[in-house]
Image (cartoon, rainbow over the protein chains, first blue to last red):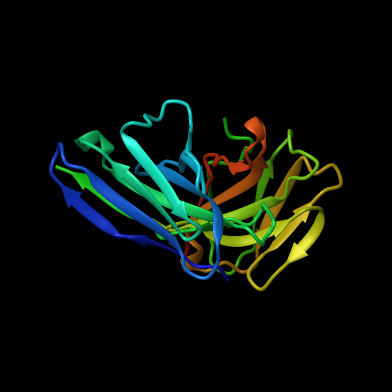
Length: 117
Length: 112
């Protein structure tokens, strides 16, 4: 099946710094990628949807200036958490939908654990 | 808002069959029903997907009645390693963007 990778798998940073998380589709072209955030013992919360070459669409309540999403190629999307604070500590998961598959096919990455001190 | 409703948690014993039902009253004509499994600190893993009637693969079966307003994931003979959170998803085509909205999921605990 299709594989989605994330890098890094975990990151610890100081408050006020920015952190970039990469999401790559390894063996297919992803026209659409999604970013989720998950707090402990909670469900995944969709943050934004990004289509290759266009601006991301953010869900209500998600600050677009804080969570910068770039989907510059068909295999790579990045999420940058700017000026991170402890409340941004969470598990960030991306998923990708291929251009050849049906729109129901969505493949998830392994997630990135962000801890802000 | 999540478009699906599932029991929050279930307990089962090893070797038993587990059925998890999901309600999706507002499913759209073109929506598929997809189930994912998630272990702690991992991304969701695809289990099975279906549109109507019954679908079976090597790990699970999915039963979908004719009105498609609900679906049931069936896990045969569960083992301790099946302890995880199970999510039922249908597509959300609001705003013209097809996206998945996760509900609470069902936390399955398999006991020895």
